[in-house]
Amino acid sequence: MKYRYLTRAAAAGLVLFFGARAFAQPPITDGVYHPPATAADSAIEAQTTAVASTLRCPVCQGESIQDSPSELSQQMRDLVRDKLKAGESPDQIRAYFVSKYGEWILLEPKMTGLNIALYALPVVLIAGGLVLIAFLVRRWTKPAEAEEG
Amino acid sequence: MNWKRVAIALLAVVPVIALFAFGFTRDPAQIPSPLPGKKAPPFNLAVVSPGEGLLAKSVGDTIRLPDLAGKIIVLNFFASWCMPCRTEHAALSSMARYYADKPIQFIGVLYNDEPAAGLRWIAEMGGMSYPAVTDVESRTAIDYGLYGVPETFIIDPHGTVAHKELGPVTEEILRRVVDSVLVTMAPADSAFPAKGK
Image (cartoon, rainbow over all chains, first blue to last red; front, side, top):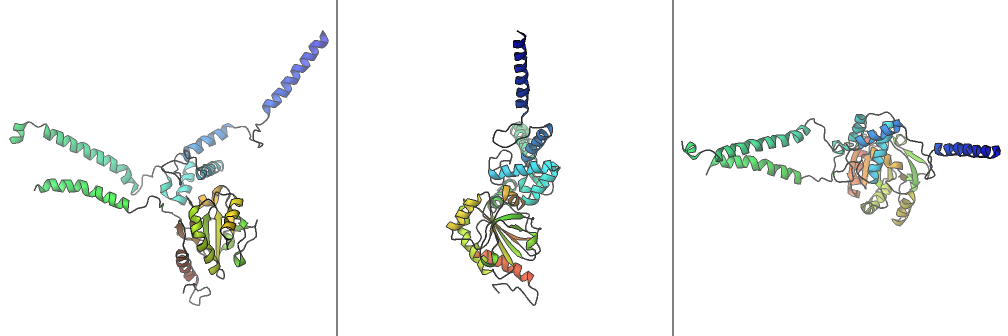
């Protein structure tokens, strides 16, 4: 009887020991060692996504390198990730891409120089349109006698 | 005629027409590169195809930008899957032979392509007179602001990008740009006179 309990305890111990070891193993799914993700990795991934979302894919139409499935976008994302890991700031990385591709690479142009017109023009046009509409409505709804007078 | 109304209409319509007219003069596919006039990004690329004669490099060796100081570099990005690259290949190969005795290094950079596919393509095209290198992860391509192939960069002997050609390059373009750089290299007692002169 006592012997049976001892065997069971030993078996349970072995299962726990090897089971825990099995769970502690790093995932090797594709024959390559992938260290478990850490909080720092997750932070880098989040930053990579944020920076990549602001950069235009050079081989697509109005897509960011984050959204594009193209090979070049993938490689650019990898480069963004590597630069973040090397300690570069998102602004430094964007500046790097601007130095290579020009401001065109930024999905949102910087608000400097002539670019200000890009931001200001729609506001000016909408404001002008509203003023024009207000003026015309006022004129059309003006009483006839007032117009004659 | 109510001149006031005509003036308002013109004021509204003319800027729109001007904006469209300006837009039609520009090709949206042509992205202005900030590189010409600036220092060429350094590269260190492994040779996959040796080239021939004076331009030859051993397979497995690396070609580094600093090692080419004092030479004009014609850096052409190409791929086996790129149809326009076929168009320009003969021009590049023949111009590399034409300038073989001058301080000019032609280099073909295989872009997003397997070296084996690149080698098959080179054989299919009847060879390449200058070395081809491979660009792992397209780091050099991104450093050069590449967004398609073919693209060709001409770098002066001081390491400054003198010209970027988007799309297939021709003999005429190569001769014009390379000769203009050769002239700047050549003092009055020219050691390297331009070929076309």
